[in-house]
Image (cartoon, rainbow, N blue to C red; front, side, top):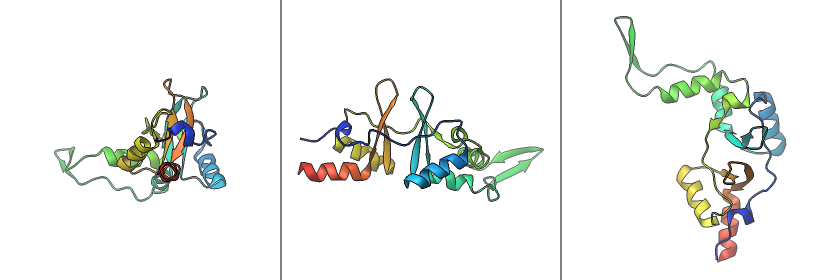
Length: 155
């Protein structure tokens, strides 16, 4: 029988607050050798996640060109989606974890099976997922390795 996420998750994940500086985020990730950190508010509710990818975008301040566009009659017509570009610009000028984070990240629930969590991790190409309860409070983090170990032990 497949174990639940509650049985395999880290119940004491390292976190940051939205108002923590980018430097604090980098220090905490480096100190604990983590590729990402959940961002929680003062009540412990998950509000986002900051990953190494977010930090790489933050470091691209001088290398953000607008997407292909045409300038016609004083206006700009973009030849594709500007959403990705806008996100890169926003993250490049971030000063806090709240500015840098990805809001509303993919999450797991404690009741999920390890197999279900594995499918979610694979589908979204993540290495780890925050685990939240029904109220949205962060109760843990489950990693790809946690899931793989549980699946191997269940065989």
